[in-house]
Length: 109
Image (cartoon, rainbow, N blue to C red; front, side):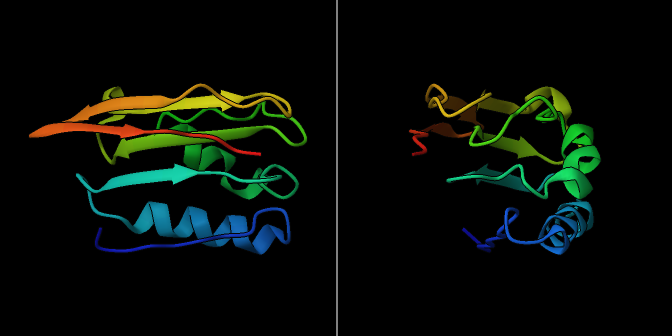
């Protein structure tokens, strides 16, 4: 892990904008693992188009829904994500990264 970031997208729209700016600034090939907790959708609108451009369509996630993803920027066909549209947990997200396997047990309460 070369970096760790956290944005409270419930607290303020500026946090979603900051997250989108961060993701947009990453170089092609960067691998990003993201997951949500509690309530990510309240102010997520500023980041929805950036997430969608990375293959993460979460515009249908409702209040208390959740989502998790693994992307390699610039390679949307490699994007893997799961989502729970409401307060139910999304299933585990399992992906393979070149050189081995990485399992992300995604549980959000």
